[in-house]
Amino acid sequence: MARTMTTSERENFLAQPHIGVLSVTSDDDRPPLTVPVWYAYQPGGNITFFTGSEGRKARKTTLLERAGRLSFCVQNPEPPYRYVTVEGTVIGADRSPSVEDVAAIAGRYLPADVARGLAENEAANDTGTLVLFTVRPDRWLSADFG
Image (cartoon, rainbow, N blue to C red; front, top):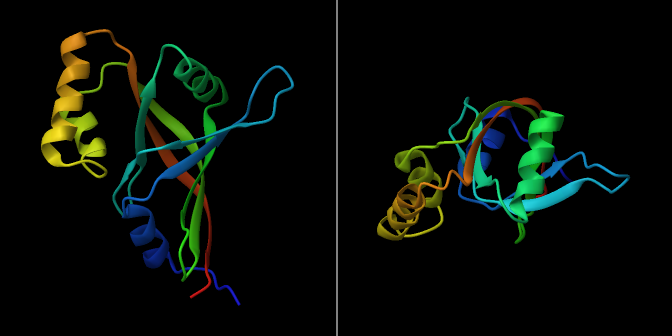
């Protein structure tokens, strides 16, 4: 039987480098847009992630800015199964994120030198294609099947 995680458990679980899945209200009678993202989170803080503002990623950015809220879920796909879902409000959309901000998120998923290279490459291109979103957690849902 699943149990709800404590505040500490859910915040520590979210702070681990899982792949996050965000869902945001869509447009044109389409279902919500639901996509995986890399993210960063420190217990008690906000969720941050970056995405593009051009090409296929432009739709995600447009929808997030328009809706101003989203659902965000992380899970452990292996036993013991666990998940944390956050319903949150977008409180920031930085269209010129720093190399450090991008590298901090990418560094959770890639070796530090590769993450730094990715961030520096984006900055060197000076195309303004990345948007760093900051989301304030408003409501939590969780389950631990362990």
